[in-house]
Length: 580
Image (cartoon, rainbow, N blue to C red; front, side, top):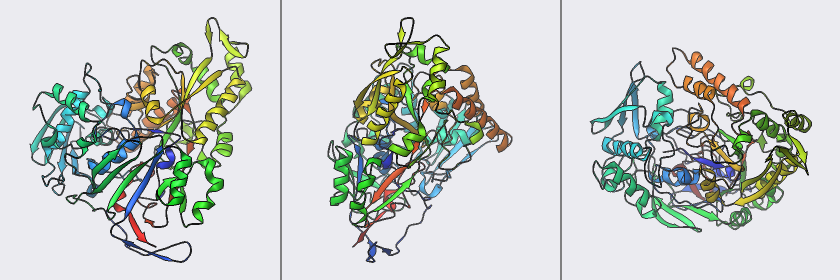
């Protein structure tokens, strides 16, 4: 399952900017900056820095909302091979997917998923249709309306999984047939639905047979235990140890059916702050990491020792959330489009890009970024909402709001709110402080409250949490199940990762992107209608799309080539360590 939220503050971890090669590696000699040749060799340790104050804490490839984060997904993708692998051109790479192919009928109601016969678990057993069905049935049970904690499954309903499925049966040991209740857009179902179904080792995890209520309760109880990930792996690595606030150590899976890892060890390293991570890069304790924009002035300390610094953009959307869940005291205020528009008009994206991101970002005015380029983005569908403080203030006063002691007030309501942000990176703190100053100019007063990444996600995903009204530091990378970015997982009234925004016309436009079309042009017309409406509706306050500022030691070969920043799914098994 690849349904995950990514912090804005720590987006710098998605390394690389070039296209991920499908099924080919490199053994060529690379030149060091000082003219010393670097020759890739087998072995060595690849140590990857996690964002500051971030822990990996979920060890099965289906998750709940509180643990829906990209770094859990990084580890999961090394241990459990995804059913469908996409490169950064959004093409399915069948040789790197558990599914060898997927066929479907013209009506979009029947889909045959074929399991590649080369994939094996680390215990030598083959990956089969029963493993895929185990995942589907577990997700189905974890998506039930009255399922016990820690569920429900975060992607419940996305891509018609599981609610739109009439039946899922094993045709044979390497084929599963899915029959849907109604016709749907075939690419949408594959890219947003089937892509969620990462096979899990049924023989190791199935404890209760057909009693799926007990089974998902059991899976929820072991999901946070690293020992769970050690039961069986069909990914390129196996987990050797996990020490919270320290590191997660992996070794190559000898039974992996794809390109076997060259490195002898892969380590995800915990970092207490971006300053500590910078020091780890300088000392060589980390050889694949990032720098915060605020550290660019000190980057010579890294480049002088041969480290490579390169930017990259993820295909995602970044925002400030507004708590519009029913129990939120600010819901009745945020429900007004004019309020959301006034807040948006008070965000100076160009100033944030220039002074905080130091040019390593691009403005964004809707659910799709203009960079990186994809067929889904249309500049005409996402018109610019310009920064204009006077227009923003006038918009509020024209609707009956007036300032009382510097706070916009109307009746018993005040625009005086708590704004969460993710701690650990200086640029994130600078951004929320800047936004606070700008909003104060129109009578909106916010109190900043910093939280560690995991706590931030837990708080903002809790529909009953009323301790915050605004939250900055999160975003969405379109890396599954929302590969086809039609918005259902974010902006519909039943969105599992939404913030309470609900609009019937929005629902209808999203639904229109899910049905079959005679031509691609017809589909894109429906998609652009959704995109344009969503941009203007402001279900979130749009933020700049920040570039990743990545750092790779000069001994790491392939970091830039195999990191796939567009989707945020690095292929560490293709990277190599070189001799100096």
